[in-house]
Length: 566
Ligand code: ADP
Image (cartoon, rainbow, N blue to C red):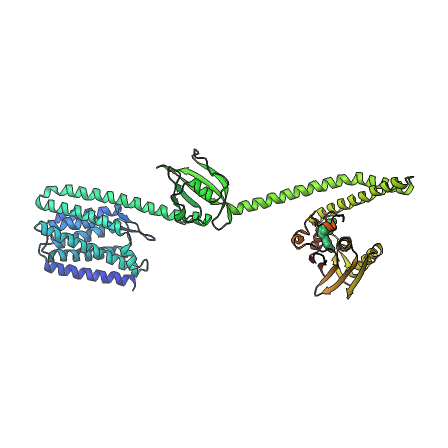
């Protein structure tokens, strides 16, 4: 039903009841006209000082019309009461600038409520006698007035789709009962006293006005409290209040979400205990501090962790409020940045040390070679010089690998890409290694050729050399090493397969980590730097490829890399 139709229906109903009232009650409409005008003016003037009701979602207000209703019934005719209410509300609605439709609805609804209430008072014998029976009749009439008023308002909200009928009727029942009881009591006293002695009327009116102000202040404070509670409940930050003894008195939904601990289990606990419960790393804020910010790490109820920034402020009535802000994301980014920075500094250090080592090493190797070629060293002496040369060579390889890795991680690998035939490269290296080893049989298995990729010839050679030398090095008992080159759809794959020592499953994950070497008794005598595979992976990835392996300890390993075909 459209709201206009509803307002029209209420208006017609109100008019009908007024007609019925006019016929059933006696007393002239304009009897004590000044009194009608006085009450109407009072009602109108109280509009700007309405009493707000605590309702979620939309505002609703009331004024002390029940008091005026109750007082007037004793002093004038029922029609004059209706007139005062109608006029008072009509002017009041203009004063607070309600829309015409709302204004008409307000006046019609209150005329309807007042007429219904007055008809009940009349049916119970009227109130002109101002005795106990009259007082009772007025109380019942006021109750009817209030009930009809609530029903029409709830009906309007339901028709407008703003709220459910029953919810509106139930909403803030306590607050409304307080207002009605206070108003009816003051109205009854004012009416009864003035019916006996009219001079008491100003005292009654003063009481009415004072009550209106007191109630509107009280309800405003309640509405503010409700608003604050809504803000706390919907905040993204955790808001926690502590009493003077540092015990938790409130724990909002965001605190629950941040920590995983529900309010029920936390409220009442000393905050130090809550802190311990979350395994937090530091007391957030010194007790003596008035206002401070600090960060700490907590463990959440579901065993995760979070970084929290907390600020603390004292509350005027004692105790304090803590605001907990989730800093986890920012912290994690900071940690990654710091780690990257540390890694960069480490790499810079290694690179500069390696550079510095190169020059003296070149001299050592040079003189060792000269001594071996032209020197007079014989026997043991010659042997020692050979050791110097071999170990120097090992050191040079290590330094070269370190500098290579550094260069690769800076993205300088594929600066000048050539067309490289992997099949040719494999042939060359298998032949070279075959000449050098006697205990191993090297098998080359090429399915189709050429196997061309784009990249740096020297770097790709390094990959093959490293994998082949590992396969031989880690097969100390000899055996077959198979090198297979194949072409797949859009890529070239190389596999180096040995039947050597294999890699223990527990250490496989770290195999590509710089300086990582498998530590088992059977390979203690095999020398190496732990840089080879790290370098291999950097090169393959810099060429847009991928590397992996399968290995069974004691059975052998297969290292495979794949590069995009040219
Ligand atoms: P290293 O200089 O020690 O050979 P790498 O980075 O080339 O360094 O290899 C890392 C570790 O992986 C080696 O210490 C070795 O134990 C293991 N490994 C590499 N290739 C093989 C393989 N083909 N068979 C068995 N173990 C291997």
